[in-house]
Length: 286
Ligand SMILES: [Zn+2]
Image (cartoon, rainbow, N blue to C red; front, side, top):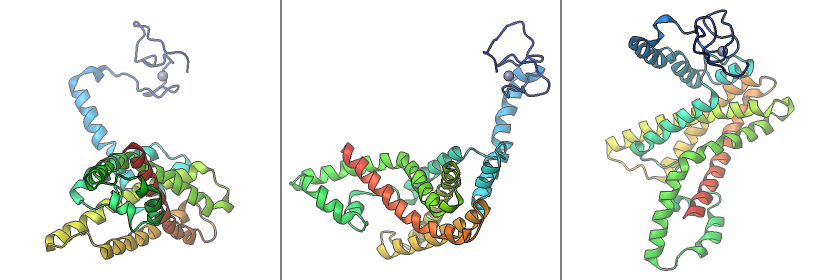
């Protein structure tokens, strides 16, 4: 690829409009730009292109989402094998699922990733430590303390969306440790983790949405600790099944499915680590 040149007289059907390389087909062999066709500047072409991006890229978007949910590990295996043209980039797919989760979260009204002050201070693995270290730093008077907690919760909920990304490298680390004898590149584990957390976010959105909707239908409350534990068990079981299938496909070898299933337990630890990150981030900015 040379320096971009745009000589006005050069014919965009003979030389690439972006990099100037001679064209031998419909796409530039040097930079991938599409050859300009005579009808390209018409309004109908622009509209047709937008429809194609939503429906034909449908091949990429819907195909990737379908594979993510129904064929665990296929997206990672494709990425490793270099079959990437027809798939969404792992990070793009992750961000998309992240956006879906946080857009629907207020409708679902179930607290998993935007943990509030009360949740941090009780019931978490680190809660005793958090109480011991942070409660002495809190305001003494009741009103000041309540104002502080309200501000903390607001900060926690704005931070949560961006912080979910830390779950991917943390989970990749767990996967790397679990499959250490295979000596695979860390990037493979990171892509595996991005795909898993993307699936996990979709699963949480769907299952919490359905269960919360059903409970409201019966007029029951979703703020029940036993129910939360039951949902965690179901989450671990579904994650374990997905990870077992995906690990067998991506890593193969002896006990790959078992190692994959065990990674579902690592996800509990990753979730706790994420909550510690979120707590510290909210604390630091309140
Ligand atoms: Zn070009």
